[in-house]
Amino acid sequence: MASISFNFNGLHSIFKEAINRHELTIAFSLANGRGRFSFLIFIPTKKNGEIKWEALELFLVLGRTQAVRRFPLYGNHFNSGNFQIYLTPADQSAIYNELGLDEANPSGTTFNMKDFLSTLNSAIPTTLPLETKVATLKNNLNALRPIIPKHLDDATKIFLIGKKKLTPPFRPREETLRKLCYLDAEPKAIAALINRLKERNWTLCWTAEEPEDSGSAFDSLWSVAWS
Image (tube, rainbow, N blue to C red; front, top):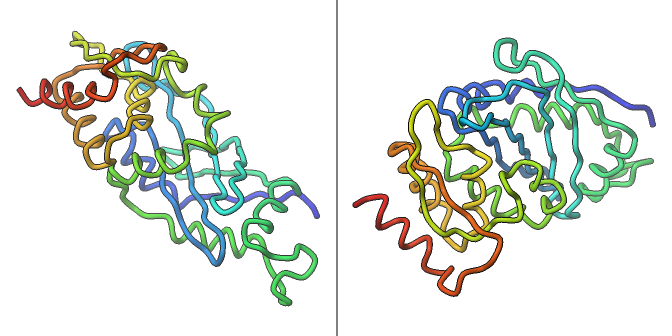
């Protein structure tokens, strides 16, 4: 089995949307046959919350088998819509396994990996609600546990303790807001809170030690955010 390349240009619309909305996480799931495929891209920011333009990676979480494949992304993503990846034989084997197919003779028929990837690519949505991104992150936290700390600010601090007002040009960092997905709150509520924090230019304060009243931190912040 040889390595192959593929351009997930179906990501272009939601990538531009993420940049324009300053919602710098892309996360969604697709189903195909027995397989469940979650796509995740984490767009980094500087300390002031501005986008840090650097090389990106696509993480593909294989939901049924809980495998995670990491792909460097190549090409001009925003302007040209190129999201080129290279799949090694190990990547392809993981996809076969997720689909429950025999690599030598999947389903007793001819299976073309590029045709399969094209089917996934064409199923990528053209718009992505923040609630969907939050839900996808929450649903994949266990599989992403070895990876996601790199895409969080102070990754050991995951217990919410409050908010902090920022002064422009500083704005909330995605690496801080993503931590809300660790909390026991509905995706709809988390998405609404994130939007409210951005409206008020508030960031969040976290600690590595679980406070005695940690369960009420989200409710308290919710009340303050709309006061």
